[in-house]
Length: 638
Image (tube, rainbow, N blue to C red):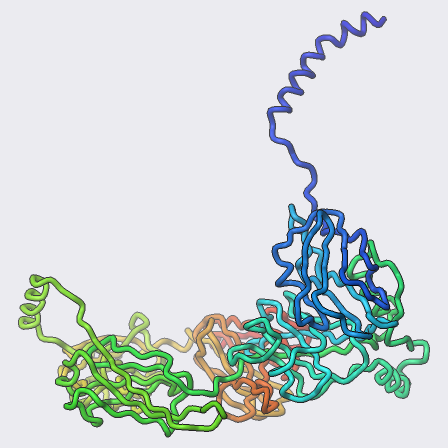
């Protein structure tokens, strides 16, 4: 029987060996990928110890760690003046203190995203090692969210959230905080293990990692008032209100002597906060904060250039005030009257056109500037600067130069003027705008001709072109355009002449007024308006419409091009028609902003009815909440 069985299985054996050989030649599957973060298997001393007097901490994990981000991610609260020494010994993380610990204080070591395994980079998020140098562990917390004040987005990098026991406004400028926490990727933060007290809260995107607000470009956020962290106080007030009974009472501090090894960070938090009791979290205060950068306070010249012989350009840190002045110092032939100023929209830039072509021929032009700055005592003083603007022609070969001179003699130079765009289709509400390459000197209305073409016959239309007083290089024609009408514009030489005597060539262009059916309309109903609101409509990042309102009601935006629009609301407290940032020392918060919960897709020939309740949304578009807005669409023309 055994012989029979052996004979029976012998033919199979080579096949098994062959199959085994083939399997050895293929790539190994590697098994299931590890998706679990490192786990704590032992801590020495035990996590959440009281009466802590050790000189170092040892935390042992079940796998090897990647130490790349420990320095950036670890947050110690209260902060230590000398950072502890951190090293790994096999799978054990060792933290040795370089200074004496404070007496009767609860320390929290939050590792953020620092703890991750070496191979798969799985992160043990926000693991905390906590101990008290006193008999009890403080268990109060300040929690909340942080957003950028200008657009309600979440800050991209972790930001320090700092608490001070001294309440003077100058504390963030000259003293490190007593407690510190850090925001996560969602903008949430928690400063844990606090003792009962009154605190100043300050948020800092620390530019030089010193826990001090000492750089003008650092982003900050702050609370207007001090923060009372006292579970007994809030519990007592809620009990007096009759909302809760005495079973909701539990102590502020917990004398824990438990070994939390093996517990997840989330489980430890649940134990400490007693959230499993399904009762109010008396131990935590929640706040919403909005981060901003203060406006610079001192004026200076950021850059200056002369990219064209006839044009000097300067950019300033702040808008120019009445104290600003300039005068030419070189060449001597250049007078003040021969400099034509063109300010930027916010008056933080200045262009000077050299009307004197003789002076423009000089390779170097010098100006003396006078403006107000602040000295070291923050007192206004007059600053004098001399700027030398140098222009150098691009080098050309002798043959190219000679050819260019011959062409210049043969071909007359004309003033370049831009006018009708959009493939000959013009907006029914807008002026015809002509933009010259240099400032306009004069215009001759008699050299402009406009015709309406109802069929094949051109009918002259009376127009009155005028120079735009707000823009040196623009000429405008205002006219009550007729829907879908065809027009022809002719500009003869001399219609527009620049300050150098250069005029336009004969220009002829036909265009058509777009039909109303190509536009959409927005009817925006705002409810519970309690202050001045600046409504802004953006197409991508471009501001296309703006309106200031001061009461609830329906506001119409006519003739909207079909596109996607983002609607922003600014609580314009100073009525200056723009968003204003905050100022910490003055206790001034940035102006509050809101957004329509989702972007609006405007369709041609459609009415878009939208209702929004002010104060109902504190997120950027894309996170719509129930009940924050309503939208109804219907055809504009049947």
